[in-house]
Image (cartoon, rainbow over all chains, first blue to last red; front, side, top):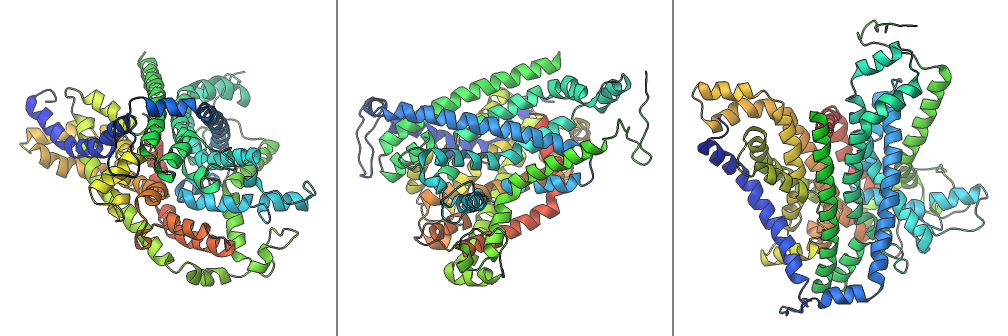
Length: 295
Length: 294
């Protein structure tokens, strides 16, 4: 019933709306980005093809490689922290203690609340004159004068990471919790019957079975973090003096800030190449995991 | 020494070793630290919204408001006169995005769940790949596209791209759900002479309803969350501004009235929170189903 021609046509008819939508709103713009990256398009209506000039310019400018490097450092620390905190949180939520279901609901707000609004709250916490972090540190005598966290390059860099971690943690937590709960219960029982302690069971049963989920989530988180825009834009707009400018922010500032569409598109193409690379790694990993499952 | 797991009296679940008292203390302490990290901005935001303006800028810093009041919740309506409209806009945009996504995704997910045709694997992978591209990367061509289609500065400039980036993940989630509905039910209906479309409408759709509800909630949350960048770039008219951007304009002013900004934020997120509290049962179940098998 599944191989016949009429069945295929029916399936394609069902798919058509989704397919057409994505082709127009995602695939065509992706193609357009590549085309634009070879032009000098700007605010004026006409533009010419300029070959590789945009690419030569961005890589010749010197700070672009610095921005790429910064993006990767930013992404690495953010993903690492999300995975560690999220997995620890999931194992806490997985423990059979009273109040568990309430705790589960309480971890969700950063994910549910519109991202921008959560970021406004962080902006206040980072406020140098009167924010909570600087304020409490002064009260406890850890600081002698106000600390405008977002005004210094180093602290702004780490502050944007902390906020990104905060937004990403609930997703990792829920995902890892789901993975933990899919571990068959009789494995624990059997191990317990054989006299295995809690730590031993965690190391020898839970952890090995979590590896696929950890891998999948890290890759998904990597892609999402790499594309992160709102947090940095709202908190610092890439400043102070470029210290929080990641590739996405750089692309936005070039294209929408300075209206250099061609140069912005060239940057977007570089980002897309990285994302494609991550996708390939992700697909490979998923396929290998599925083969492992089938064995 | 061999042990057999005693069964819990009511649940019938085996109770393996109980926690010792210090383990319980450690678990609660860990939970407290974890929840503090997650909730600190909300706690602080709420406390700030209760503080009178004078106290906001006093040193030393007071964590707990002295003679706090809900005054900011009343005065903010003057500072952000369009607040009610922003909240409405956010809801309207998210609702339309959700309707579009569901309309497009339900048939597509069914096609992927039930039919194997030439290129079906490739297409499914293609949708997954789309999921990896954020709107931020495609902002320039999307801006041009919206301009060509004459959609800039309308609701549609936020709705159309917003839905596009939520379709792929929704297809995957709903497909997983539909694959768990027994295939025999469809086949029995076909044998009885029902058309394919009739089968989809009368047999599969009712059974898939809980899954569709989960996808709808997640789409709604996603649509609400992504409103910042599309609204920032494709809309400059205040009457169409969604809440995140409406507040951003207020936030960008020279003197930010923090207690009112926080009060406005809480009013804005309250409706979403209420919806979630009522529907969280579906949400956790759906996330668990979608997350493990991908």
